[in-house]
Image 1: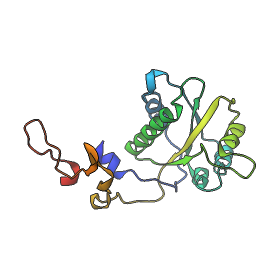
Image 2: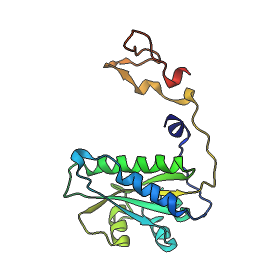
Image 3: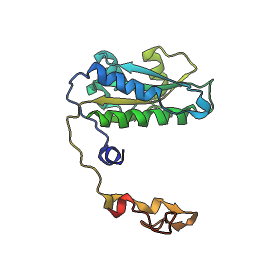
Image 4: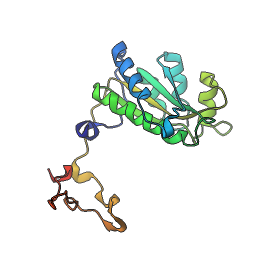
Length: 195
């Protein structure tokens, strides 16, 4: 898993090659295995592989969704807001599991944020997607994940580029340092950054 996390980068350019049925089935299985608060499973997923709809989705927001036009598949990550008060979190978990599964299958992916983004001055990106795909009003849209065979190569971030100042140890005023966590025997654990 750590190797997948290290290699995963947002891919916004795709070859146009169609995904295999088995790949799509595995991606859908990953979505349906995503954990949710209290096991409510409020999420709903709309798979889009129709070129015209992909082109429509690529215009969902003012900036940052154009790559969807070239994706082989877009997965619209939605939820029934009447079923759970933490549908946003549940959708986010499902979305990242989808992206990691895509990475494991040799595919690229990128997240297009929809919730709380604008399509234009009169309509939100979420309203645009709801209208385009015929979603009922209680089905809210968190994001759209574009997936396909990558047409670009992006290097993994080097360990030295990671911002370890974002990690605190026991208290907020104490920075975590690599090798500072001790195992049961009082021996410092070997952490990925120490390798």
